[in-house]
Every structure is written in structure tokens, then in C-alpha cells.
Length: 127
Ligand SMILES: [Zn+2]
Ligand SMILES: [Zn+2]
Image (cartoon, rainbow, N blue to C red):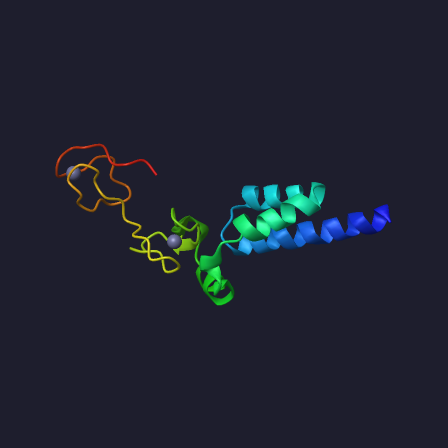
């Protein structure tokens, strides 16, 4: 009986890990959910299903693979939904979040690599 429980927990953990990765979790948090699921299946699996899954990435299969074809350094994660976006995207295709940083002081768009706002010299917001 114990062995069967472990097998189910392992399968669930494996599924959670892949599902979390596909939904834009990074490896660390996907692994965390997987470990939690393995150790506390009854508690963690429902928690994952409720809180861990990211509903904005429904169409993940095609989209994610498309974008995944790019060089790694051109990818970043949307700060709003965690979806994978290319570095030169102006907005997240998953949730519509505007990705270009804005100056906190004057509100103008800043290039990502700028350290300060060239318009008013306010330090650019740190990602
Ligand atoms: Zn997003
Ligand atoms: Zn400014």
C-alpha cells in the first residue's frame, strides 16, 4: 500500500513539475511544487491546482514552443504573469502587461538597459 502511495505521489510530482514549467514557473518554483506534492500530496496538489497554475497560459503549447526556439538570452519572464516573452516585446502576449519600464518620476518609457531616466535623471526602476 505504501509503495503504491509513493508511486502515485511520484507521478503527481512529475506531472506538477512539467505542468508548472509549462505555465511559466521557473525551474526552482516548479521543483518546489513538485517536492511539496511528493511530500504532502493531499495538501499540496489541491493547493497547486488552485494557486500554482497560471490560467493565462492556456495556449501554452504552440506559443511556448515558438518562443522557446529563440536564443535563451533573448527571453525574459513577464513580471505580471510569468509568461515567456522576448526581450524586445513591448507587451506580454499572454496578459497584455506593458513590458517596457517606465520612469517613476516623469512616466516616459525607458530602454531596459538604461540605468537612469535620460529625461529627468531619476534612477530607472530595478527589475
Ligand atoms: Zn504577462
Ligand atoms: Zn524620468
